[in-house]
Image 1 (spheres, helix red, strand yellow):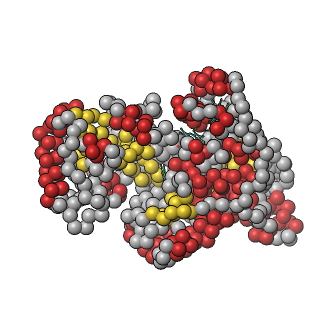
Image 2: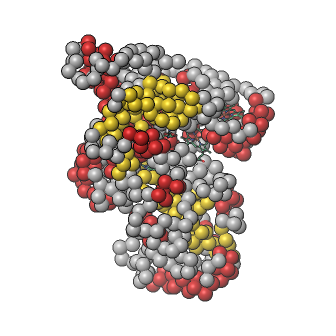
Length: 592
Ligand SMILES: Cc1cc2nc3c(=O)[nH]c(=O)nc-3n(C[C@H](O)[C@H](O)[C@H](O)COP(=O)(O)OP(=O)(O)OC[C@H]3O[C@@H](n4cnc5c(N)ncnc54)[C@H](O)[C@@H]3O)c2cc1C
């Protein structure tokens, strides 16, 4: 599958008579599988791959999942500064304004990377993404920004990452290994030399060699043990904590770099959202869905309100985490039930939310009186009745004298009284979402060892770095995806230059792939027997088929026809060739 070549770095350097670089002559010629190995095909890894390739590097992307995209498939927007879209709307933004906003929100972001991101997000992220075919169509105003700067693609960030995956699949110098987990890194003579891998479908193990490795493995929000271990010192670890990051977010990048003494930073800064509902479709009860309802009041285990429910997330997050136990109930009435939203899994639709969440008596309690509601939710009845009555009085007065949710300075539309039965109570828990710390990197995205020296040949990008401290102590809006692209490109560039030397800078860049090449095989295909085999395949629950299983279980439930996604170029079978992978990419937005 891979062309085997001698170490290009040394050969090229020799050609260029730049032998001054230490170590080259002494390293024995070594067959490599690529110039750069990228671990993880999330948005940071794909950005790194495209960048390294455009500088002339042969790239191998190794991904544990069967599909690319990582968390970007479920994310929303990018914080971008002084863009054509902002200008078209008459908004004045600048690196200085953005820097001030980021510092005010995050409190203590890394000044170097934050300044750089504010200054370069237009050229390095916006212009680069749009040249690859990404279209930003809307701008959202967020609590963090004094100027609307959250740039959204229609249909969510899946439509920002799919064009990047498509471009990567179209470049022949980029190879992919799917269903393959990187389990270790090989270092020889003080330099990274390759990665050990395990195929998730058949357990096959192999070493792939390359002189530069980029860790783009994402955060650790699904590794609740690690989350607890690095919990912030000023607040107790919640008794119950749900995972709200994808199941591949295990923090494996930290484990991979650890044997070399890699420095880590800010591991105790984590985004914890407070509206986590145990996902009824997750058998181990560890995964959470995000539940929100602007019509609800929040009460603690004593049945009392404890915060301004409409305050920004970083305020309410702290209020909930300080509770003992750290759990809350959303209480709303029949009118408010219409405002309930649940996010975080592809199976959620208005109909399934009504049936499987609102209609699920274990998750959502309902009753015709507040007292009966309290009874079934296990809350003190008299206190809850008082709380609701007091809140209703605040609504009538137009003033919440307890927490300031209603009154001057109110940012949300005024809430309504809770008075229309049935009444509802939903118990929610803190839930992980993203990391603000991780592997420590320098300005070239090189992973730092203990005493600030770099680990030769090792780079990191994206959430594996907590995206380089840009978020400070509080997760911002769009300040993960954008910085993941920036750090990904910086890491890809550094890795390519390390291997190719000066030649990298002058290698002809691949042209932007904004226009899709014509592809064969996109005509619908008629299927007969295949659909009958699907239940058996799903029931087999084979290791390494997680995404195939969750996606096809869903489309069986929806009764979707195979030919909606599988076309003549890609029948209902594994996508093996690049062409099949390209056809497959057309299906992602049917669920994401
Ligand atoms: C629900 C949700 C909504 C969000 N919304 C936003 C938003 O609107 N704006 C924003 O800026 N950010 C948002 N974020 C955060 C943002 O999506 C992520 O920080 C970002 O996508 C991380 O990208 P990444 O490439 O660094 O990591 P990931 O997307 O996590 O990708 C890492 C990849 O590496 C693979 N991998 C991991 N370990 C290994 C291994 N050992 N071997 C092989 N492969 C491995 C994983 O399978 C995965 O594909 C959101 C996050 C969530 C969970």
